[in-house]
Image (cartoon, rainbow, N blue to C red; front, side, top):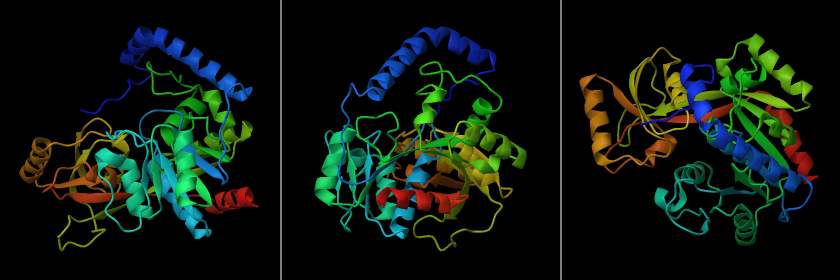
Length: 353
């Protein structure tokens, strides 16, 4: 089932940090030493002949990054650019580098390319390069596809490749808790943080995702915190549309409320469930660990429960690719609505000028 780190202010959270405080301290020392090595030029960085835009985060777990990559690719295309996407392909089982021209041929399987790159390929139609060595993959992507820019899906911590713009995604609740309420930000493995908070200072901008969770005063307080650090930020609201099962005659974006059974294997399943409940729908949930591959038995049980409880099974686009054949749920499409989008369009164009 799904795993989440205990709340930092809870008894479980205190015990968790106590047990794993030593490993987290060692991890933190390693992170800072590595950051210093890159900052002083002791480790060589690799450049490709075109601009590289990286969209990443400081934490493990869902921050709404994949819809952000889709938004960024779409914005680049609307501005007349020819991007290619580079991804690690977390969860893929195939070794080496995979190049996907995306010219209408069948896409590789999830095992071959990973669920997030497959979703990006299907939604955007752009070429992708997938592999663990980001620098090598960026070079291969440029040589093979000849794009005029690269979009790096995740990779804020993978500093070996030079990025013209390094942007971060921050979940609104986590950003507010750490930035305004000053709650602790424990590093791995004691908490979800990949780097200390001050690592955000090397970002060129920050996207506050799921901003619909914040009240106007909370947005103002959070924006003020980032402004004082000299970091520009935008608030991003999640927009959800639903599509019926394949072969169904039901219309897309059917008016709610509904009785949903949300089947998910996400970093932040609660956000998915909240988005479904926003129109007053009754949402029950079955959660698995992020990137879990669903078995026939697990999926059959979900559909049996939905039938008993008079619900509709619904999954995200990303999870749909990890369902076994023969199961057709409703599918939720998650999109970014970026406040002040024009600010980022001008930022992008400044890189090309």
